[in-house]
Image (cartoon, rainbow, N blue to C red; front, side, top):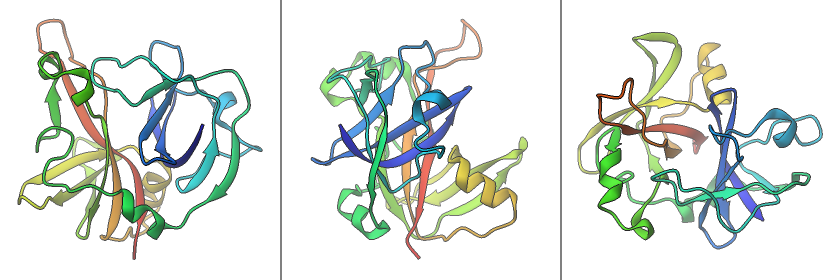
Length: 212
């Protein structure tokens, strides 16, 4: 399957890869491991990490485990990944969506219980949005991590953790990232710190593409 890579994101001890196929549908390749992360030996192409904007050819099954909220998941097949091209940032504009609702609501998470009330065909865990005033700041609780802060078209302020390794490295080195960018917002399966606390599906910025 061919996809435009829009995320190569931190995920446990591996990475979360996601992109858009030729028909404009989101695809998230996942492994059969419990955490679904893609290990280094699988994803490296000619000694390099897949980059956002790369066009990748990845052997995938037609379906994958939904993990409670992720209909985009496709299980990996055995085989070599290939890079077959690249696109320009402006080529992605046709795939952007309105940001008035970002992955089901205007909060930084969705209660996992909500997905028991939504038909599977209504699930969504990836969205590409364009915001012209994104502010990147260090996480006050962990200076090694970064957050993207922005106001959506409904006037709601969102602060989402950034898990794009390339952008995090640039920010850590003191580089400026454009305020006008495309953000790949992804949502993780339900998580809670203990068995008494209801699970939440947290959102994060898994990919950043600067437009100016």
